[in-house]
Length: 499
Image (cartoon, rainbow, N blue to C red; front, side, top):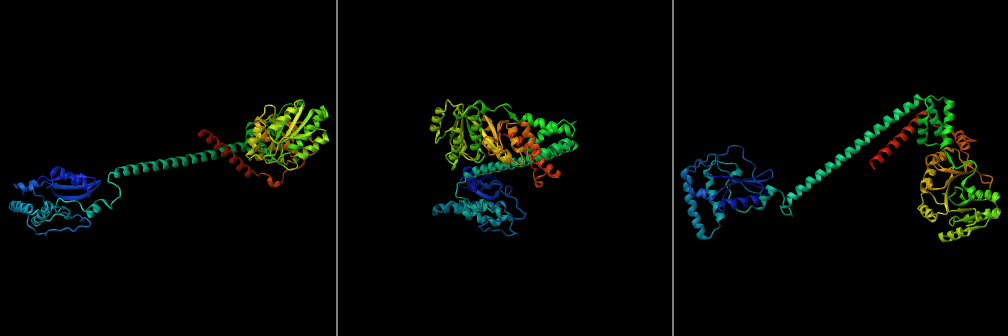
């Protein structure tokens, strides 16, 4: 016999291939699920009818352990002592099958039912095969067989299965890529952390070997300077300097980096139109009165013009009007941009015009609106900073008010600052020009031209009072602070490179 093997993804496809090649009379000898689909062993029906020397082609009895039967279907097994099938028996079977087919055709029976009955008659004559090798009639696959082979039925067509497999493989590959990216990010983070630790240890060990650097760092941090500026100055300190030379070098370095226009005069002495900007409470109104008073003493009250744009704070206009009456200078209120433009046109002949603006916190969204309202080329902006504020707040104020684009900076309330280093640090790092210093409430006595040497001395010595011992750094705390600062700088540098 010519037994043929058919493999397909589903039992339906395999049966279709059997019918297409062997015809409707094909005999199914075996079907079983295999990896990736279903396997069917089939035989053409014509080969059974031809007879011939079939004994040699008869399948060898299978004596291995029988395979597990299909779920949902009873399996008939033959007796163990059944005689082997001979040629005579097979010929008799063929004749009987032909006679039964003629009878079935006459009676209008179904061909598939006839083949099933004839195959059942053949079963006792064959050595007992495994249950799955029992000959099967060619008939549609029932639901129980389909579930046993393929599992539970699906609402979607079988053609979707390859798409699902591709989608599943794509999803697994995408998840693998995400996991790999996360792993690489963690490894980079670990490498960066280790690198920062090693750099910090190496840098601080170098500082320990140079006592002058260590003393300078402690001095600057205690005075309120930022770790960033302190590290920069310490790194530039000559290695062969003693304590006295290092002290003089530090003072000169700070004085050189604190910018001023001229020690003899400021931009206000030359005249012009200036708007004083800054958060609430930094002393803009008092500073405007001090500048106007000193200018009026030299050039007369008729050369000064005062405008207030502070329409938010209660009593702000009254405060400036009071100063104006004392100086003999009228004060005008600008409620909007157009009114401000009219007053500026009216004061074209005045040598000095000062605009007192509303106090807006550095994180307020109205800062942008205020800067836009004063965007006229005629008006120059001056930022007023409170020296007694935290260094972080001063730094934020400079960024929010675009201090680098301003004509200069006025440092107010210097007398209230316990540590002046933070304010000077911000001026040095942002390279701002200092135009004046206010250190009290008296008008105009407490207004001074900037003197860098005096301010540096005041910052390093602490003035009349020293900071509380609670805020002093110990050696271990200094090491941790500097190491953390070093890691922050390195992290920002790495982020900038990735961007």
